[in-house]
Image (cartoon, rainbow over all chains, first blue to last red; front, side):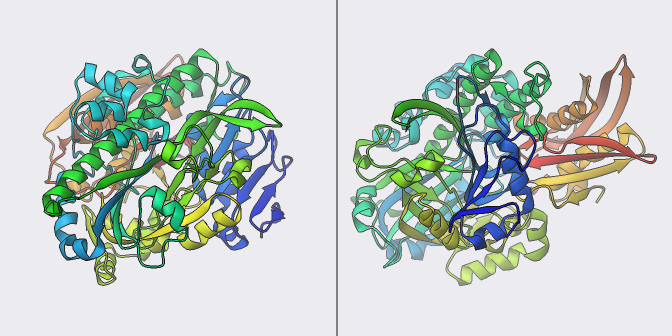
Length: 480
Length: 142
């Protein structure tokens, strides 16, 4: 174990605030000793850099799936006092509101497995993915503005979904304080033709089912609408070029203003603006537009997948395709907490982390008020994925938890170690049919490039960051 | 390959280093590296489209950041896959100026892409000299 880490308990480790000049708070990293050992050393540098942000309270937090990125590590979380603190694009990421939607169906593994090639091939053909693929919709300037403000509501109004899709999203698929006038023309141009597309890299669409014995809390699973043997679908995507350009625009602007704000961070990617400054508010309002576009993106993909399922399995008269929940990974959101008995609004930056609200929170759909928030955790394409629920025990992380497995190999290392074509063949032998535009890209996403998701999720649960409800076995995957 | 992968900066993304004997050379090599990471066979990209542009900055690193971002902008906004054909750099009163020609083709099924680069980051972005060589290091968000 690294000598600068202090063990708080079996699943929490701390780096003190005197580790590095400028740290305002200690850093806390969650996970078993084995998980912490798998983290690359840049994670510890990046999370202690996060601790230097003005206005951060309690700890700079890193989830068990933490691995190095830029600015914040992936899995990094910071709670910032909005009155005195900052907003930092590097604490959110370029792919604003990259997130996951879980869809439950009443199709069974027996019904879908014989048609899995047909289903995956059809989704690959009809859901745009990869570079230059276009999107499901093409929006005019005016309708783009409406979509930036309305998110999933825009989709439902225009026939791309149902009312329950709205309810089953964080922020009901439409975050407030989105102002299209704060979005550059370049961002509009980069995003206009990409709404309703998967993207590439670690984005994917996966067909899964729940094996017998893989539901660990039947009562909560029943409320979430999933059951053994049934087919579920995960969609992992974000705000595409639109969000990437918004982050680029404001990162560059903030970088030029660091002297004015009297900021000096160890990493230029952490360039920030005071949250209440004009510049900080402009970014917040533009970022919220990207949050809504990402919600809309996943909604359009869900709608297209629903059409394909009805096309292939519509003879089943009562076919049901429902959104279980849609979670954000890369955001800064104003959220309410009770701290020392007082209500407090904090700006929670999460980069590669999931909100996990406990039971009783009014932000949750009525249906989930007694269970806590569904938390969707995508594994690698070769491993299980998980569904957890939020618990009161996650208050230390401001109700934040893991979002995936977390990498252990860089993309270059993975490419050197794995062969994409062999990987696809091996996966098919194991019962996972995969369709990809590039075998080279596939090798970068091999299961061996990621931590053991079972151990990551178990670590999260033991650290109090949610409760495991079920796990999913992949049978088909579209890797862009 | 005319670029090196830097391994110990980021697991999630890609860090690269390019070397050259002039600023023009590292800008061209940086742009080529960006496209080479995305396109499976960059040498097969036909030269049917030419874009001329000019960018300025008081900071050399930001100029490099802007230059690479131009390539990403054309990829997403105009669906063009472009590589730098020529770059001309001047410095007047501490203002760096880069005139460039990007050359390439419409993105189509003719081309296979390995990955999409989402963004150029400021993480670890630096341009420095070692002896006679200029070196640029940058991290791309994947």
